[in-house]
Length: 149
Image: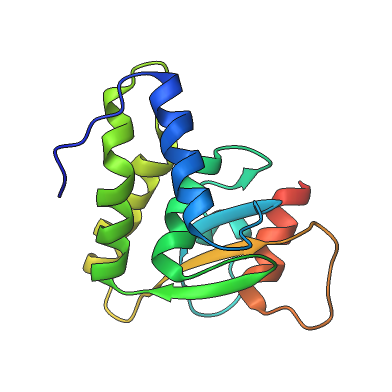
């Protein structure tokens, strides 16, 4: 964990820019979310407690950094260590009281729920655009549904 703190919106913007520039070819996603896998037919709301569409790009690039995501549509499984790494990388933003930091709160809640549910896994899903694709997977389809609604 770092002692770094981003107390202003300008510091958050600078951190976002620094992280985006560190990923060669990085493109901001049209939508992204962290969710908890579930068995059977689940709704997007059951899987993804928070969906980001065209906003909150600091958490997006934090996830991309941890997952190795550069651009496009993709789903990544996050083990407890990688999810904690994302939480730690984003946590300096909490020092800025101009924002509520809903993604950080959700990531912590998902981490706790995953620990309490045997067999549950955490996914990070990025959509490069909002157009459906015949090759996308289950969680990408669910996120696309949630982003459209």
